[in-house]
Image (cartoon, rainbow, N blue to C red; front, side, top):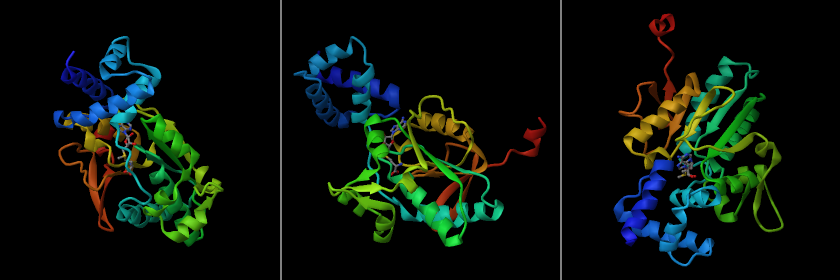
Length: 282
Ligand SMILES: C[S@@+](CC[C@H](N)C(=O)[O-])C[C@H]1O[C@@H](n2cnc3c(N)ncnc32)[C@H](O)[C@@H]1O
């Protein structure tokens, strides 16, 4: 079996499971990663790994394959204007509309190692304290990769990680340095976030509709059909009038008519349209 055929086999498997497309010019990267997996499994060559795969790709083997295909790049308060927009638009509106009795339900849909959900929780706590109110909120943070979720659940970050995007006063207030020189998220923040595995390509089931979904820097790896399919599913989990935030290089243009775009603080965010009266009557 030629290397090219083996790489095509694994690339197709990854595309089917994740929707992530490995272009042929990136096959060298896939080859390096498959060699890493082979080593981890105590197998000498990727030919042998391919033979092993013919028996079925399941369990830990499948997870390893999905893990190597994902890019987990993230940082605290990534794209800061988005967080300013959440405060200026979503939290401000929520405060006006509701006396904070109702729970604000948030989903970080490609959470990686958790920085996005931790930043959002900190933002809400800071806003609440500035306004002198109590905000009842919960964040569900999901990712396909168990490896990143295991890290996210620990809520433990290196010096280098906290230096990426986290202002010093917030670091001091919401993290505690442990004896290994890593920074632990305080329980006040950690307890607001629930982590769970979720492949966005598979069906979604959540107990309540979301008021805000952060789905940033994940659809970028999908083809147009994959993006539409995921967006369609995600949209059903959002309450009417609720918000969707994509990555700074991503847009809904040509992908969905279910939203109107709103600009705030230099960020573009999307608001799910209210059902029209015609549709309601139908
Ligand atoms: C680049 S990170 C983005 C993290 C964060 N949202 C941000 O913008 O900083 C993309 C994440 O999407 C996850 N991912 C990729 N494909 C996925 C899928 N089909 N379902 C769920 N998560 C996926 C990856 O494991 C990775 O952690």
